[in-house]
Image (tube, rainbow, N blue to C red; front, side, top):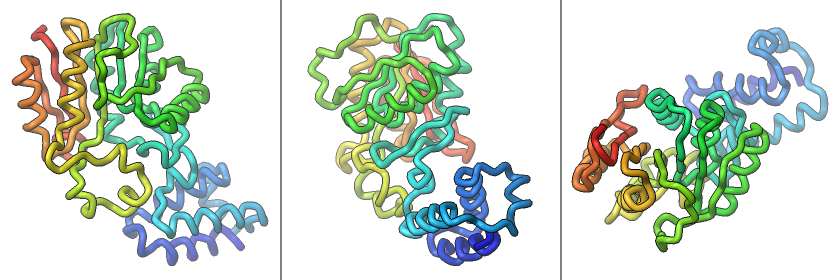
Length: 286
């Protein structure tokens, strides 16, 4: 089978899973990763025959993609803020909106020393990408999932970055968090999708990504934000900054949560799609 022949089968089999506009990008991403080809080499290789190993691998990939499994899980990796990160169903797939949140933190905080904590770290994408740009910072991350932490530790090793990983459930905070110094920055992309919105999600999300990292009770969608704000007041420095990724429908409610807890300099920020998906607040006005 030639690469051109595989592409024809690929489009036919995945036309019910992906929009036509997505298919070409998914194909290029898959083939570039599996055959280690640049975009130019990919075009030149269209009439090249696939060997038996390549054909078997791509057939297996196609079967998994046809089931709706996300490409990042099929490949086992993705790129985030220029880092290559391992992916698995133990954690959410890192997304462009979270890259925007990381960029916001970096552009506002250029000082040499900082104690930062990421809550609900998943793959470790947030703390590792920040550590990559701010190597002098002391960075820790927590997650209630041992499987997610194992993945984050692997990603730290792969990228030769040093972060402190903590198994801790923020919802069960017993006021015994293992902390040596007050936190300067707290950041989180917590679960924020009410269960009643599950059916609105793509099957690639709701059927494959971990529910633990996605959903919150319908009657209390701010449960993680409230707990993290209380946590930040308890363990943060007098000038602690808190950064959240948020549900666009809950933006004003999270803003109000910060306001009633006497935070200042509260700013909502839109993502590249124009949706209010990030918020930052200071414990004290600077």
